[in-house]
Image (cartoon, rainbow, N blue to C red; front, side, top):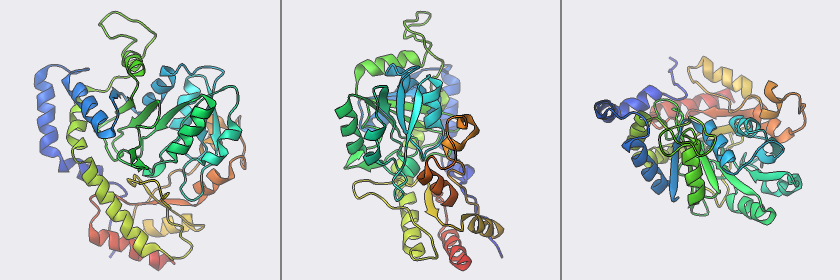
Amino acid sequence: MNKKIKFLNLKQINLFFEEELLDAFKEVLHSGWLVLGDNVKKFEENYAKFNETKYCIGVSNGLDALILSLKSLDIKNGDEVIVPSNTYIATWLAVSIVGATPVPVEPDIETYNINPSLIEEKISNKTKAIIPVNLYGQAAKLEEICKIAEKHGIKVIEDNAQAQGAMYKGKKTGSWGHVNATSFYPGKNLGALGDAGSITTNEIKLQEKLVKLRNYGSTKKYYHDIIGHNCRLDELQAAFLNIKLKRLEFFNNKRIQIANVYYDFLKNTGDIILPKIDENATSVYHQFIIRTKLRDQLLNYLSNHGIETMIHYPVPSHLQKAYKRNYKKGDFPIAEEISNTCLSLPINPFLKEDDLEYIIKKIKSFY
C-alpha cells in the first residue's frame, strides 16, 4: 500500500508552534499597535544577533529586501549587477526592477552555487555589485567573492533567502555582504505565516537609509527625506518569527540529519548525483537536490507511489519569458543542465523515519 508523503507539510510545522502563535496573535491584537512596533524591533534585534551582524531591517518580503538593498547602494539604470545563472528568478528581477542589468555567471556544477573563477571576466566599468546566492541552503564561496569585489571596487549583496544559519569558513551567511537580503516566505527554513523578509548590514549609514526606504522615505511620521516605498515587516509576522527563530537551529539540525540519511543510502544508486558541500561551507538543506538524467521518469514514479517531489527550478532565469529577448537556449549550459536533471526530495524536518525509509526504498526500486 502506497504512503502519502507531502514535499513540505507547512500545517504540521506551524501546528508545532500553535499555542505560542495564538498567544502572540492575542498579544498583538490587544496591543493595538499593528505596524512597526515593539515586535518588529525585537525581531530585528534577535535576528541581527542570530545572524552575527550589527543591524537587521525587517521588510515585507525577500524580493523587496533585494530591491531595497540595491537601492541603498544607489544601483540604478545603466548599471550592471553580476548574478548567478542558476538561482530563483527573484535575484534577477530585483536587478531589473531598479533599472540595472543582470549579468549572469555560471555555477559550479557540483555545488550549484556561482563559480568565483568565472566572475572577473564578466566585470565591466558598468558593474556596481555582485549578488551571490546561497542556493538550496549551502553557503557560496563568499570569501573569494568578497575579495574579487574589493579588488574591483564593487559591492556585495548576499541573497540569503535559502540559507539562514549556514556558514562559510565559520562565518554566518547573510553577514558577508555590504547588505544581505533574506526571505521568510512560509516554506523557508525560518518561515512566517505569510510574506516577510529582512536585510542585514554592519554599516550604520546603510541601516539608516534602509529604515527610510522601507517606510515612505521617512523616520518621522509625515516627514519624508527620500523617495521611499511601503515595504515594512508586519508587526504580526514579526511576532511569529520571534517565536520560530528560537527553534531555527533545532530544525536546521533535523534537516541535516535527514540529508545525512539520504547521503548514506542513496550513494551509488543508479545515475543519481548527490549534492556536494564545499569543504569550507555548511548547508542547512533548504532543499535536498539530486540530479539524474531520468529525472522526469523518477518524479512520475515517486508520484505514483505517493511521494511528492519538486523541481528547483524547471526553467532557468535566462529562458523565462521575462528575459527571452535577451537570451537563447544554450547561452548558459550549466544552469540548463541543472534545470533539466535536478529533483528535490522531501526534507521536511517533521519527516518520519519510516517515511524516509519508504522514499529511499522507492528510489532504489526505481533503479
